Length: 341
Image 1 (cartoon, rainbow, N blue to C red):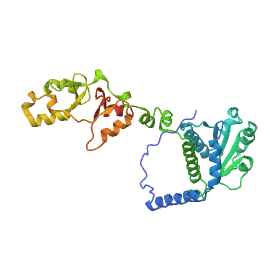
Image 2: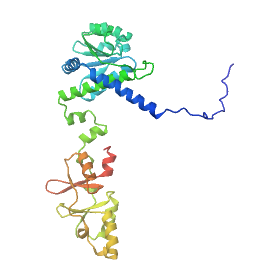
Image 3: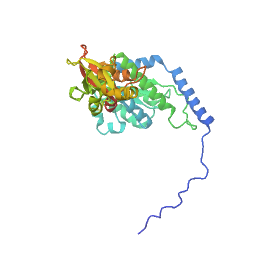
Image 4: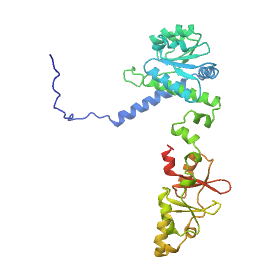
C-alpha cells in the first residue's frame, strides 16, 4: 500500500520578495479610471432611461441573471433592489433549466448580464424564459451579439478594454456593470420616493436600520435603574448611588421628579480637589450642573449620540425628560454602543 511522502522540513521563506513598484500601481489605477471614464462619456442616456422606466413600471418581479463574474454582479444588484423594497431576485441560468424557471410569470422582467452577449448558458435560458412570457433585457458590452438579437431590449455598456494586460480578465467590464446597476437602483429608489423610515424597516438588524429605527425610549435606563438624589442630600451620602448604577452620575430631582441637574464622578473629583475635607458638608445641589444636556424620550437614538458628541466637550450620558421636565430615564454612551449604534 502506498503512503504519502513526509512533509517537507524546509519552511524557509524566499530570500528575495517580489515587490510592486508604486509607479506601476499608480499607472494601473489611472488606466482603470480612464476606462471607466470611457464608459461614462459614451453611455447612451436615452437607452438607459428606457431601461430604468421599464424596471420602474414592472408589475411583477425583476430577475437578474448572469454567469461567472457577471453572475455575482447580478446577485449584488438584485440584493440592492430588494433592500430598497423592490421585488427582485437572482435567477441562476443553470438552475433555471432544472426547475427554477417555474418562478417566472408573464409579469416579470429578466435582465441578462453578459459582457460578450454570447454566453452559452444565457442563450439556452432565453427561449425558456420567453415561453413563460417574461420580458427579456440583455445588458452587454459588445455592440453586435447573439443575445441582444434574442431579447426584447438591449442596453449597451461601452467598454474600451479590460484593465487586464491580456484584455481577458473581466475586471473593468464587471466594474461597469456594477456601477450601472447600482446607479439605476438609486434612480428607482428616488422615483419611488422611498423614505428613510421605509429604508430603515428593510435594515432592522444593521447599524443603518438601528440608527433610523431606534428611539431613545428603546435604549434608555428606566426609573428603577436611575441614580437619583435630592439637591439637599450630602455628596458623601450619595457615593454608593453615584457608583452602583453604572451611569457615572447622579440625577438631581425634586419631590415631583422634575430634573434639577446632574452631578458626575468628574464633578466629585473636582469638588474633592477644590474643597478637601469641606466636601463632607457640601450638598449635591450646591455643586451640581443645573444646565445639563437633555433629550426627550421620543427622540431618535442617533440624535442622542450626536448630542453627546457635540461641542464644547463630549459627555457620557443624557437625562431623558418629557415636555414638563419630568425625569423619565437616562441614555448612556455605553448603552448606545451596546445597542449597535
